[in-house]
Length: 427
Image (cartoon, rainbow, N blue to C red; front, side, top):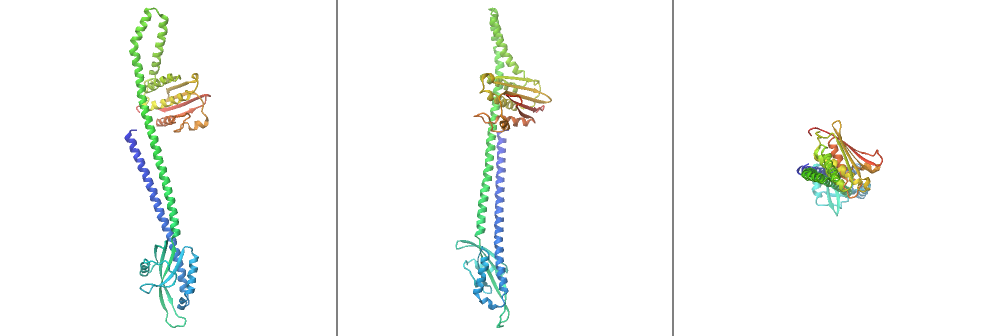
């Protein structure tokens, strides 16, 4: 994937996460507003219930004379207020006056805004609500208009009616406290989700960068491997004249024993390169040649056997087959490097069967069942100072070609990886 494509994908990922965070915030805001509305409506219903109870009592009075007993009415109001924890006070106002006058009850939370609420209640003939801050408290006020039918016990005046405004003051504190707790919870939840999403972006970005570095390194190694193989072949061709001169001199001097030793060394060097070239696939030949040089330096007995690959269109990208083989070989080299020299043995085989490429690589060693479960996971490594990405990259690349990779522990004392790649001609 190109740098531009990776940046574009990263931008899309960031945009998606930003949209998710915005959606979560909007959802929380809507829930907050809905909760606030529900709690406020609950407090309104409590205020209306208190007003209706008081109205029912007033209408049940046998005469207007009972309205003069303010002490009895105050006791009644006190009982109504004490029955509901959120009620603070109830008062009644004479609505027939331009400026309503309090008839009875308590009205200690009065404000200038009340006159406007009373006027709206009288003109609309409906209960009007308002939320205010009075004496450092958040309160809700309700002004509800009612009409009382009045009569005199002794008949001193004819029946009449009285328009009254019932003022109910409730404590808005419990609503505010519930909303504050809800707000804190939503902020914490949104913050946690946002932080988690940002962490995911950072992790994905780190993994993407690590893979990009690995791809770049693999490409560079592939080019170096091809250069080394080419230089080895050209070097042997360049030295051929020198070899011929040396052979001619040994024959002329009748040094037949030295000639025999010289030609054996020469044939061994040439046959080693020829064995690599006979693999028939440039990318695979290059990686085998490069790893053979590494094995020689580390005193690892590295053997290989490839059959039927010459002239066959593998259909696997050269960079991918180099990454697969390179990571598998490196993994085996790392596994045996700490062993005694005689045990440092790594063997890789490859063949084609039924339009599928099979690779097996084995080395001495052992892996526990617990380790085997995590062997292909990213960042997991049995060796110190290793990234743990090699086998996970192999597994990802194998899946790209509809293939499979398995850890084979059937032979005691041997660790073997079996790889199968489906081949597609002209890929």
